[in-house]
Amino acid sequence: MKRLYRSRKDRIIAGVCGGIGEYFEIDPTLIRLVWLLLGLTGAGIVVYIVAWAIVPEEPVSTPATEPL
View 1 (spheres, rainbow, N blue to C red):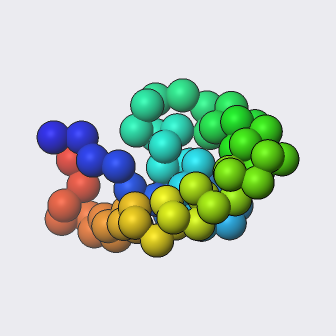
View 2: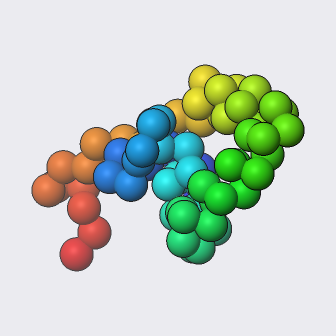
């Protein structure tokens, strides 16, 4: 089952945009541009902070748990 996580490897601030990009399999830069446009209205900043608090960070993968 696919889960939404904050990205550990593709992050600029908290990994929210990177995680959303990985989840929907699109470029995180596009997500960041949408957040920027929403941020200009003021709502994007609040939504980003809420997503930062709610979305869990991607689990650390160990060599034993990585798929082959």
